[in-house]
Image: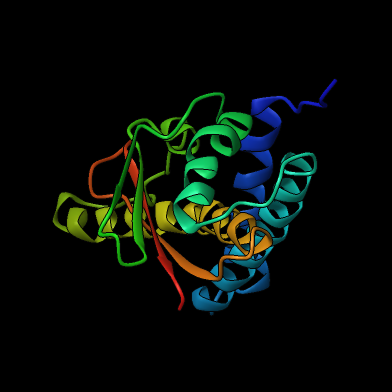
Amino acid sequence: MGREVSESCVDSLLTEMVSTYCNRFYANKPELAARRIEAIGYQVGHQLSERYTMERPRFTDHLEAIKFICKDFWSELFKKQIDNLKTNHRGTFVLQDNRFRWLTRMSVDPPQGESQDNSADGENKVAQATSMHLYFPCGIIRGALSNLGIPCAVSADISNLPACSFVVRIKV
């Protein structure tokens, strides 16, 4: 029987981790905070992949491993599969979740005393805060694939919230 953790606990942990790294540890260095959050996600993904593939044969190709991430791995993490998988058949895969769970419950408080004139600046801060929360799942995907023998780079696209697309570029 598998062990499960409450979704609210994971949501709170992610929120506090991002807040702590962005506002306390690396308040003036967001790129270092992003790198550290992604590194923690990498470790989590690596260990989860190890656990979920323990009794499986090794994957024979990249597509098979990516399909595992989209179906089984994602289902274990988010209780649903990836909604859409696209590839250019040259090492780039786009995994789309139309309702990414970690973004659906996220809210960002607007700065106090902000006027309507600064709405574009406020939107930029919201986008930056949202993207900081996506370094962790990008790290999870990269760590899981690394454990499966696939070195890659992972980035996220949030142009259509709460949908999120994860772009996986396999290193040759």
